Length: 326
View 1: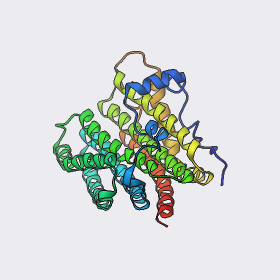
View 2: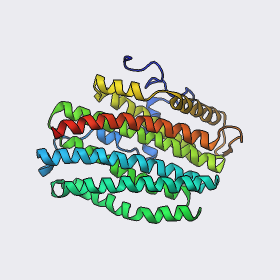
View 3: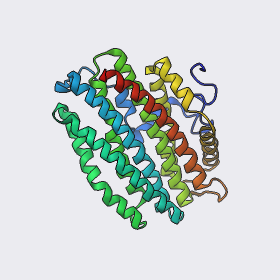
View 4: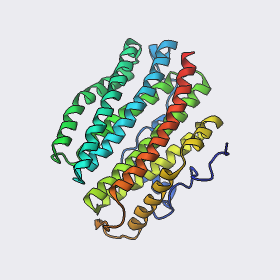
């Protein structure tokens, strides 16, 4: 097995260099403050000494960790659904709506499994976790209405749709924080921090996927699109470093084993094409060249990369859940 970090792609060199990549560190963090960052900052700074009441019990802690793993499955389907919604609303073609409807069915299965696991937690949840899962339940109850609107046609704005999915995904991701808080053992805590950072990395890659899809569907580069794409880069850098800091050699090896291949290389190349175009522009809004990038090429490559990250996350989660259940 190769040493960490992998030669191709490296955690530090898997995106092209350019103006987006060469930003000073202070500028990067300033940009992060412009668009809300998801869980990586909170995961990296979880206060493990806070009052976790009954969730500190062996049963409550293991159930919370298991719920976080099940939430990751649902997150993955929602991330896919968010991107297929962008393509469908962009009126790319009838097949895009069919793809969205197929994804809705996959999401429904993940919702059912998550809700079953969440019901098992019941009274063992801390007040903070209880409030979070209640919010998630409300958003899941509203999800079919959003899905129906997307299927009927482009009545909803892409920004509205992506915001709805992103809020729900963030709450699911933040269950990782609650899982870390239940870990009294340092090794377990590090394992949970590592898989949480990996989950945050995957969400940043998924955000990159839908941000570029939004621009491609409109065939326009906007100042907001530039800023959002910059933020996805920063979030990926921070999450990768958080993973490196917390991960065990075995976990790093799993990343090296899974996150490689043609989809990763294609994502790297396509991102390079987008960044090169952005770096060549000076105005706020510019038309994308017709031959710059195909929507389906981009979506396929980024979906493939996300699947590889999910495979890695799943393997690590399985070992953690097996450990706390033994």
